[in-house]
Image (cartoon, rainbow, N blue to C red; front, side, top):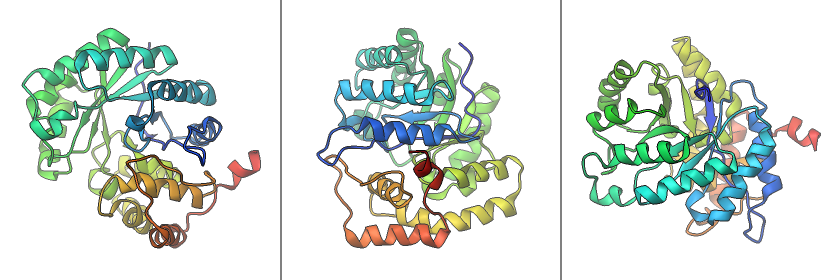
Length: 315
């Protein structure tokens, strides 16, 4: 199987629910078709934080993969978030995702590592087991420096040079580390695709990456595709212009009290754009309230980002 080409935008879509809380598969198919149909979108990454992946049952997760695979009809690969705690559990999860039609795996760290840290060698074993058991092409997920699940450079280098690892989603949020570690990763594996996930402040990372893997790709994919192009062209004035246009939306969605609130804000953004009819979420997420909803809608208006008319016309 050819290596996934992720040199562009890889949105991490939300999961649409019915008003009574079930997974709304037709609505999710609509999101998939809209995003996959854009020139510059390279993959769709589901079942992660933005997609409330850990809030779904196993059957819901697998059916969502099948829904996405059918909806995109081969236009882009579907990448599944792998979140199982134990190495064996994660490998079995990946195998089922592959059977459902996924091509890639965004490999989350054991969530216990966030609090307690990880033992040397354990992350490498996790990636190796997932690749060997499932054959899913793996993305190294670098968590923020503020967590204990943020891998040191030696661990990243070991993972990045393993069979089956094709990219890194880097969200270290420490530019001192970014400017030192990204060049070392590229030196160790020149084919490794570097993807930023610094949703709340993308501009400083845009000139060093192959693409973006972001929840932000749900709501303003058109502008993020242009931002990637500007970054690859090393056109700082154009990148800055796009960044400034997006800033009201960035602040309304991601400069909130908790990054988890961003998922709720993403759904409200999709409602404002006409992609979703409502912003139903699952516990433990909470609604943001009418004031926040008005702020988010106003931010889209300030940025000149309107409804997706071509999507509505197609239905």
